[in-house]
Figure 1 (cartoon, rainbow, N blue to C red):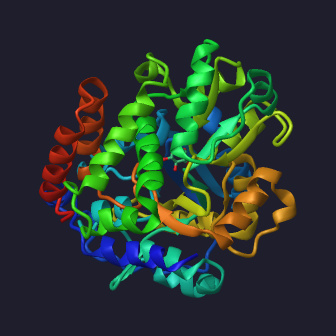
Figure 2 (tube, rainbow, N blue to C red):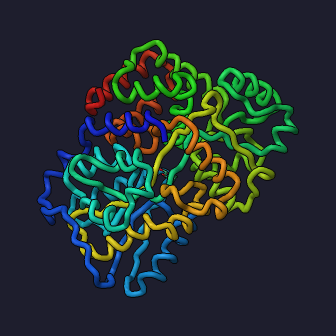
Figure 3 (cartoon, rainbow, N blue to C red):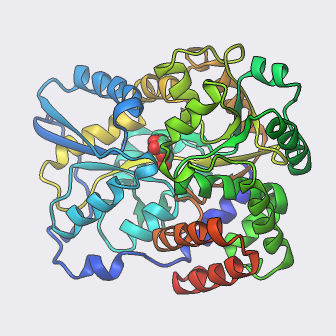
Length: 432
Ligand code: GAL
C-alpha cells in the first residue's frame, strides 16, 4: 500500500469524535480497556453484530462455520440488521451502545468510522495483546494497522479489503450496444449519449449512499489521487474551483442515471446491469460477490469490470473490521471471534464469497476468483486512497451530513450551493 494511505491515517487521527458527547452521557459499564487473554476454551453466548444479512450473508456464514468448528462450546448468535453499508445497523448499534447493551463484537469500517466514533469516546477494548500474541504485525499491511490504531492501542481486526471504484458491466451487452468501456469521464459522457439514444440507462444507481459512492468516484476522477486526499486532510478547500468541477461532473452524471435510484437497493441497481436495462453500475466489489455467489455469474465471461472512468491506477479502498466494545458480557468469546476474523482460515472462507480480498497478506489467492485476483494485484501496485462512503476518510457526523447534501444536490444540481454546504459540514464536524 502506498504512502497516501499513511497520510490518510495521520490526518484521521487529528479528526474529532462523532458520538462522543452522546456516548459520555451514559456511565461506562467497564472502565478498563485492557484485555486479558485466557487459556481456557471460550463458552456461552457470543453475539456478533453486522449488516451482512440476506444476499450479503453467505461470506459471513462461511466464516461462522469455520469459527464453530474451532469453538464448539460457544453459542454464536449472528445478529444482523439489513441495509446496505449499514444504513440501519449503525443506528441500532448506536442505541445499543448508549444503553450499555453492546454485542460481543460488531462490524465497523477501518478508519474514521472506528476511531472518530467509538475509540475517541472510549468505548472499545484495546486489541494490542491479540495482535502481539497472534503475530499480526507481520501479516497485516502496516498502513492498514495505522488506520485501526491510535497512540493508545489497536481497536479492531480487519477481515477484508474492498474496492469502491469499480465499473461493472456485461461484456456481451456492451458489444451489442456498440460501446466500449470508457476510460475517462469525457469518454463516459460520450458513451452515455450513445446508450441513452438506444433506450439504455447508462449508469444504474441505488439509494443515497450509493450516490455518495458514485460522487467519490467522480471526485477521484476529477481531482486525481493527490487532490482527493488533500480534500480530506483539509489542504484543498471545498470552495476550490476544482471541487466545484467535481460537483458539476456529478450533476452531469445524474443525467445518465435511473430516475428511481432513491428506491433501489444496491442489489437492485446491480440487477439492472445484469438484466440488460443499464450498461454500467459503479459500485464496491461486494457487487462481484453478489454476482458470483448469489446470481452464479462467471467473472470475465458473464460479467466484466474496470476501474471507474478516470481512476485507473488508483484503488479506492475500505476495510470491514470487528472490534470488541467495553461492557460486553462474554469477553473471552469476543476474543475468540476477533481471532477468527484475523485468521487465515477465516479470511479465506469469507473473502472469496464476498468479492473482497483478504486483509492479510499471506492468504491463498488460488482460492479467489479472477476478479479478486486482479483486485489483489491492483491493491499491491496501485496508489491507495480511502473511501468516503465507507468510513475511511471522514467521521460519521460528516458522512451523515454529506448524505443530506447529496440528496439536496440531486434535486437542485447547484454545485456552488453544494460546496458551500460541504465547507459548513466539514467545519461543524471538525474536519477542517
Ligand atoms: C459496505 C461494507 C461492505 C458491504 C457493503 C454493502 O459498507 O463495507 O462489506 O457490506 O457495505 O452493504
